[in-house]
Length: 254
Image (cartoon, rainbow, N blue to C red):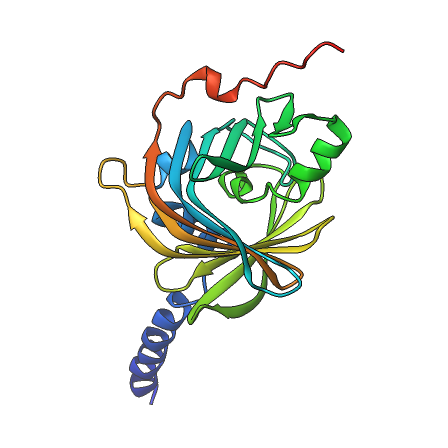
């Protein structure tokens, strides 16, 4: 009898072992897979990013297109080791043009924020960036001091995603949605002074030279209302950027 039971026990164990190996991934594993899917080391520390494309801005009351930028550009310099999810970091400049007309411009040189109207007071600038910065914290999500946890899975644009809540060392939370099949980041969201801010990413392209994966389509929403959509057509990674790009305008003496 014992000789019969022993093989049965071994068979049961052999069946159970693969099941344990198929356990659902941890939140950390989901994030790590997403970072790898977007380029691994180059995504974690790209140094610089330059994007060129178009953008459409919508009226929040009617939902109709209010304006279209046929030339929409972003320049970005990154600081590695970011700790604050929704504060300004590194350097950034964005210009939206329609023909020869500048629809809007915003820049940050690491200390000063400006728009097409001139230098923005610091208090106002801090609030502005808190409502706009958020995606870059994904590069620090696996660092010490960050907490990762699951939120309920959801569907984004027909794609099942794993939703991960990333909490920075100061307690600020950001939701990231990772495509369950590809690992790509399809969704990001956080509370802001403008309302609940969401971004939906789609149409991913890989840059063969670097392995960087960029979402060509980005839709921004506040409190469920579409604010604007961006279609990126070109991306450049790790190339030097002229320092003048990040130089604020000189304030005129009164």
